[in-house]
Image (cartoon, rainbow, N blue to C red):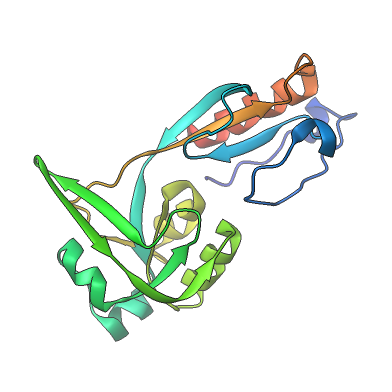
Length: 185
C-alpha cells in the first residue's frame, strides 16, 4: 500500500478497533462489522464485496539475495530458505507462456500471520510469496525486491466481508471504500 493518510476530519466520530488475525472468525459472535480477507473465500453464506485483485510475487531483501543467490527459475527455490505462510502452503505454482511449474519449498520459518511473514522477510531470513500490497513501500524503496519476475503467480483477491443476517453499517461500508481507494493507488 502507498502511504495514504486517513482523513481524520472526514469521519470524526468513527472509532476503529482492529483485530489482526489470519484465521476465519465468526463475525457475528465476535461483534465484528467488517473483515478484510485475502484469497479464496470458503464461507458461501457470507456477504462479500471484492475490493481489489493484486499481484503476488516472490520477494526477498537484497541482503538475503546477496548471501543466498538470486533464483533464476522456480526450481531454484527448492534450494533456498523460504518463509512459508502456513495458510498458503509450501508448494508454489508459477506460470509463464503456457508453461506451469510447481515447486515444493523448504523453510525453517512457518508463520500463520502475514505480519510475521513481513517481519521475517525484512529480517533477511529468507524469501517468500506474498502480495505486493504487503510490501508496497519496501518494493518502491528497494528494501525488498521481486525475483522470478518473468514467471506469474496466481493473483490474490482482497474481500470486504460483512456479517450475515444484518445490513452492513454505513461506517463499515465507508471503511471498505477507504481501503479500496488505498489499494487502487
